[in-house]
Amino acid sequence: MADGKNFSDVQYLTVAEVAGLMRVSKMTVYRLIHAGGLPAVQFGRSYRVPESAVQDYLESARVDGQSETA
Image (cartoon, rainbow, N blue to C red):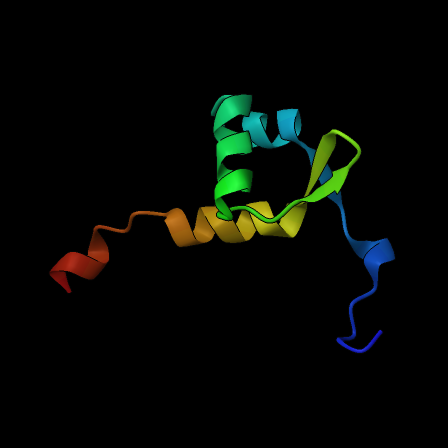
């Protein structure tokens, strides 16, 4: 592949699994996907989210009070 990614190494999660990890509803995950906040691959009517995308989203969404006082 041109970008060096090996897609056989990518772990995909269902919307229900993502919702469980993030402790939100499945509808919230669907909203994030449709708004472009969380990348996903669509297979028919189902969506799969790369596990790394969930980790990236949670890292970028994390609130860190330390940065305000430093």
